[in-house]
Image (cartoon, rainbow, N blue to C red; front, side, top):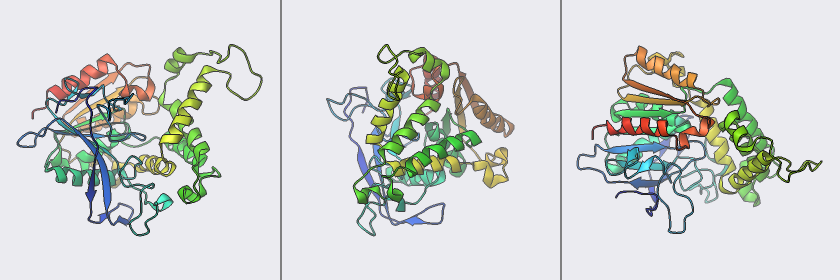
Length: 374
């Protein structure tokens, strides 16, 4: 099926009824993954591409869910017929990660042992856990090897982990606006966001569903702060500057500036659609990701058995996942004589640039994907 921006796509829930052991020593008795697919799998199943989402993403990557859907999938500019990840050539699989809140098993789903929502009882998961659950998904579709695994930010970490954990099961890894591990500053930002949620009176130790509440205030603050870090000063200043919301100072603690109005709107919207326990879980997975740690803190050693070719991209104004973090990965790959293509894109959009319609970025991904044999 060719996928366009107006194509109606149908999510599917795929169940895995065998126990799943987690990196932390716990296990899930079973789990579900919410998935969307685009394009058609070819006869020898060599054209499959996996899209891994970032912190607040999900399975809805391209197309629309119904005729009145106002917004296409979150990467609709990248995935579809004639687009860089061309659904006329590739069979694209996108999922909501384990622990998510858009249909996959997670804190908001029912614990089969109690019948109640897991809440805080849902175990912490890691990027390795996600990749191993995605390997089960590949097995479900009969895909022995991905043509490519693609992701931005936390999604890029998953693509990198795929290349390390299952080197024989993918041919190309596209790691965009990402890093081989979080900086100390990033870990600090994540903890402040988590504290905003955990200290919300409506959090109830993560079991807010039992109390019929939701820690909206904490989730709202976490998102507002996070959103600032995803943007660049130049882009934010160009968009809002010091523009006043009502063309005057209010002389109170309400909204004076347009940027305040924008952030509050983003926070309110996010707090209604996202689950707080999932936010905590996802940020911890980010913090824990460090494949070099298992190789004596030697990134080169961690990459030694990698077989995939790499496309790595960074953005000049991304200060949360700076270009230097991508260069660190590129240097280690080159030192291990791995195939790697690196693009450093000039952009004013900050970390969110990997979601934007930037001509140079789109062209770079298009060119790389066009040269993947299927």
